[in-house]
Image (spheres, rainbow, N blue to C red):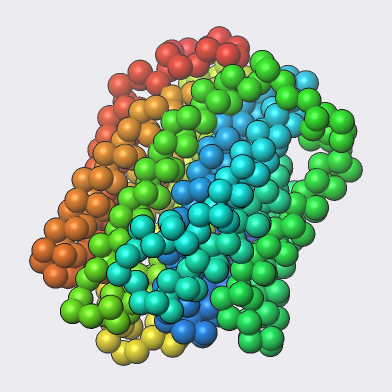
Length: 479
């Protein structure tokens, strides 16, 4: 364990605080920071590029922005299986890393990759064929031009699902073992590629929504190739031979599926709630043009919110990785300690994030060229979500990462569903449609959703019931 440096001045005191917070027999504060910095750059790259690509689409038209935003939400539902299998596999990988079982770790990576790739192959075909009926069913009152954009973009997105699934499985494996540097490199491949190709196809070649879809396909293929090469040529625990990916380990499939089903249900229902929200927002206002403007404003706010969530997602991922490895090593007390330490450090990170980004938000909004009335609405929506983040985000979203790393995945799923239905969907509908607050009502409902999550997640953690789910690895040193 690293010795505490003498505290000299504010920097010395801060270093001492970091040592007290993160040093242990498994990790040092230096190791934690080595995982955090690449992960932070990874998330900043992802979310900054999402903002820039969304602003490029907004330069086409607000109809194109509304269409792309709706389809992205639908595609998140479709990729729920991919993300769920990746999350389930990530838990197995992190625990195997903590226990030192290299054979199980490699089997988990290969099996997760094959499961996600196969599931997305089936879903991509279905999505391409059924694009028109799906859009017509979910958004019957859309303007014709928005509907045409949405159907076309959905078909293009479906073609990118298989390479994205393979990329995501390998990317998750690197993050789960704490190799944030490799994850960062892979992120740069896929996201920088997406940005550059978006600039080329949308701005230079003036291809509009088609350009956005084509850039997504090309970037995901590039990311897939890079991930596969990276894991084939890598060293250590994540060096996997090509033939391993043609063997699905039955002993690994079962725990992955067991963990993935609740993850999948949570993502499906969460994104389903987003679809419901967009559905009633598409009916808001006196004319279809009003609803298009509302959808576009909501899309811009969601896009900018991604910048604030970059550091927040780092905390969630670090919680799962570090606590998962502690639990895999049988060190339950240490996992509990890191849960508290990650939340404390996370609050400071989010406070710094908000202090830096909030004053810059009006400048970022100019990328989207909104009209003055929409500008005020977007800024107000962001204020509702951003200002409380340092106080409530970690307890609402990082604490569940600790529970899931122990195998307790059902309870966080139930909480996510309940809080989303009560807050974002039900209360959001009342505020948006009944009280006529428009998109602002959705964001107020989301804040209530977060508060419900805080109360229920912390209650579960303090109850200790999640400990009973730790069964597959070393017996914990303490209960």
